[in-house]
Image (cartoon, rainbow, N blue to C red):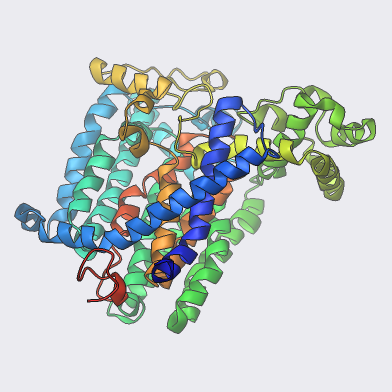
Amino acid sequence: MLNKYKKDILISILPALILSVTQVLGWQYVHNDRLIAVRNPIMYLTIFILTIIFMVVLIVIGRMMPYIMDWLKRHEVGWLNKISGHEFLIFMGILILCYIPALLAMWPGLYSYDAPGRLADYYDGGIIKPPCPIFHTLILIGCSRLGFLINGTYELGVLIYSILQGLIMSFCFAYALSYIYRKLSLKWISVFGLLFFGLNPIIQMMVFTTTHDIIFGGILLVIMVMLVDSAIDTENFFEGPSKYKNMMLLALMCFLLCLFRNQGIYMLIFTLPFLVIAFKRFRLKVFVVLVIPIILAEIVTGPLYGIFGIQKSDIKEALSLPMQQIGYVANRCPNEITDEQYQEIYRYIPEEYLKRYNPAISDPVKEGFESEAFKRDPVGFFKVWLDVGLDNISSYISAFVGCGYGYYYLGKTPYWQELIYYNGNFLDVDPRPIKRETKFEAFDHYLRTVAKDAPYDKIPVINVLLSQALPFVMMVMLAYMFLLYKKFKRLSILSFPFGYFGTLLLGPVINVRYSFSLIVLVPLLLALMDCDDGHVQGYLKPKGKFFSSTT
């Protein structure tokens, strides 16, 4: 019997192991604030058992999915077809209606995260500086100045930005939903997506939050839709009547992605080889479409930044994880570091900052990092980091898990201080009076409660739907299904969101603003579960008895 499912078993091993390891590590960290059993055989036995369980789950899902999708297609309600041709406007209109109560509740918007500091730099000294994207900062400044020009208040500037971002995100969501409706086989998933985007309190709040991560997430979603289209309808995408439009629009969106976050460049570089290998007949076109945005982004952030006197991002922004790992050992097991190693560490991280180590966020340590010392001797930093790590492997793993477990562990939602900074933060750096005056008190109370305590964690099913880890689990499941169905082009485009996921694991803190870009992919990822587009391998098509490999 095992021989009958040999292919399923072999393909499921790696994704099941990944799911098992991530859930075990996350559970341990949540319940112990560290990993207590890295060398304990019980942990490896648990991983082994969970891997078997996940293998069974994946195999069952893989075998059942064609039957499920076939049944759903045959039972779609007729009214869904009546909106054909107008679905984009209908989806966007409904989303805007869903977001109006949220905007009224948070009026004039969530002036939060880095925005106050960036506007303070501009108004007080005319400075525009990284690490926040310059392009997004210019949008913030433009909205702020326009609002002040109209009625002399900064609140209007925040409102203008909120409305602009709300419209942009509604457009991106409607674009994805209309693609699911038109091109992918299950129209009901577009309805699920509409509910997910429109009623999800996290999305309702983030859509009106003044951080660049939101528009970045919208751009990422649009790019994923275009990549899905290129994988499903490859010849039409690259050789059809709209081929130049398709490729130019994809290149433009990739360029904008790079302008809104530096991670965009790394994502494209990571994705490039996978797509070049998978898109056999169109390798040159794929290469050109992805490389041009990278080159343009490097020109903008290099020579053009220099011409206009714009500072580049500090190197310390990329070293959050190594600093957290050193800080973990220095504060939790200080005797594991020699005096000589401490002296070398203090060259880069002064002692007073090293003692500020917080396992939830790297900023207290990172704030004092000596970037100039690192530029003079980067090898010295990595050498002491490696020397300490070789003697403290379990501590380094604990610190690594602490920086990112929320992005892959389906348990309790982790957050630093609050899930979403509903009342704003860093406002003390900006003296401009921006007042929040809710126009919808009941909804304001609801959103404030969600932002502060994440109460949905206690509600089964809802806690999974709103989990920051759901996109990762779905991507792993899709990778298994694409391998099983031999959908290698679709498998290759998963490298794009996986590339972004990898950058999150190296980030400074677990924060919903960072995972937002993956959260908005959930409806599209769900739609991709239907792999039967007429080219699925015969033994998996819904014919004959359940689990039958023959007709």
